[in-house]
Image: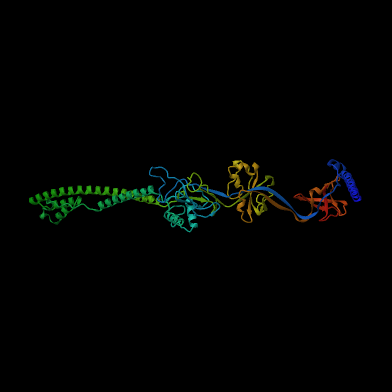
Length: 543
């Protein structure tokens, strides 16, 4: 009984003690916890502190920062306009319709670097390739043609070890044809030829030449053949009594025969018989002479006509030979514009292959980019003269997180975007971007001085199409000087410039300084007479 009473007393005491403790904790907690409003009301402003910056010793360098764009290089689009087969067939079918232009093979991949005479694609079974040259393709290169594009073709062939032979520069002759044929053989294709039209022209010219030659040969033969000799008349030989001179007159013709007859008549004497015979002989001889003379005149006229005809025939023969030579020169191996284009620089990068096998050709089959990325900077015209050729530059691509260095290659004349008169020609130098159709958007439409930059190392292909920051730094002092931030400079009512130096113990002192050049937010300072300030001291720039 006593034990149960004791347990109840202990339990009651424990409960009382616990209640007392909880009450005490509640009171203490309520005293230490504050609402945000009370905490803000009880708090005061923080103690003010000074913002300082160190005095530095440095070379003062002025930086000019502007933007620029990387162009993608010069692009060459390859667009076949008509297929030409190796046999010269232009692709016309039996029904007279144009042959289908279709991609039959793709031989390279986008991004590949290709050189001269590297087939890129096949269109209707024929290769499409590029040769180096600044003059763009604008016509088929045919035998017998002359021009700068032919000379450019010959130079490209020579670069591949293919000689034009004896052809003059700029003339597509037999030597150039042989070189082109070898070029196609290297690529694994038959060389295209001019075809049936020029072959027919050669055949016709050859036929005309042969006919003119036949006419000349016939006239030459007619002129060299002499007519047969006429028989001597009996009356001319009647005078055994006339002697040798009469006989001689019978063999003569024309006036020579008449002279012979006169001699005969004069020698007849006084004999009636002789006179009669002489008279008869004279008459006979005279008839013969007249006849012979007439025949000689006709023969002379015929000979003259033959000579004139021969001269005309020979002139026509010479003209036929020239026409035949020209026809032959225009027939044979060619390079159609549908298969070859000139690219300004090779090797070039295959930027795009828009079509796949089986696609009809209705636009470019390949796009080549030569020359690599090119940087054009947009310098504020107000800074003209501050940037010169050879100045060092640093390029930063924020998008790629890369930097590169180079030098200023040139500074061009002011360009006003969208103004056609101020657009510069694309020559691989500055302002190439200003020639684009959307030139009005270049540099946000703000006028600029185009700055070209020559890289220390070749630009990365990744930079193509990137907008970058260009930084040009120029020294303003020969050596290192003391400099402080511009915010540290104070000018009093007495026009003196001072800075406030904060000592290690927290004390402050004002130092009179002379301001010098400024750059990048820093100002050169020189301590005034009797003043002390050194690199490493801290100056107040705010609080």
